[in-house]
Length: 169
Image (cartoon, rainbow, N blue to C red):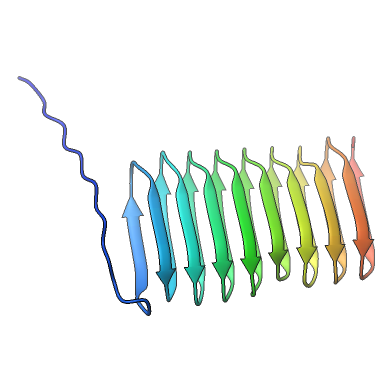
């Protein structure tokens, strides 16, 4: 018996104020100019840009990029890097086996395992719980609370108090 494969590529154009929900098991996902975005995807990249409201992404085995969001961003990622830029609201990330880069964002809360954080221009507090994770942050207007292990912590140009606990770093 011969098995046949099936492959689909979709491009959908919706009104700009649409709330977009995507569920994909294989292949890249790209969403631009939506009201809100909710993506669950695996085995390729997720790219989201120009979202007016909230962004929620859950991904496995792929790079995640969020550019320009008018509200909060919530990301859960396994095995892939994350880049978040120009977010008005808060950024919450739970990541394993991938680095996180945030630039020009609101308050950041990150839980990282085997991945480093590079944070620049955080408007608010920076809270990091890491394991085998380095932290390099600058231009944070609020307080910083960092707990990590087995890597370095570098903080520069902090606007609030900083509490750092690093084991074997």
